[in-house]
Image 1 (tube, rainbow, N blue to C red):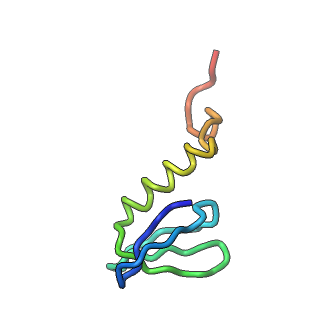
Image 2: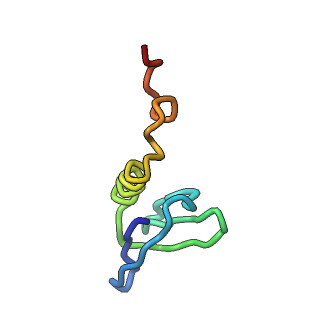
Length: 73
């Protein structure tokens, strides 16, 4: 889960596994795989870093092939 801030200043959490895309128009808009959209105060870069941290926390990026690492010897 990642925490983001609505335009009115309240915070809420999203399950990062359901995030399909993060766009800036100029506000940051997060689209989920369900089609739901959320406009947030956080920058796209901040949201992306939180997504990566979440993936690391749940070890989604622990597979070297997913991370893009070369074959291990």
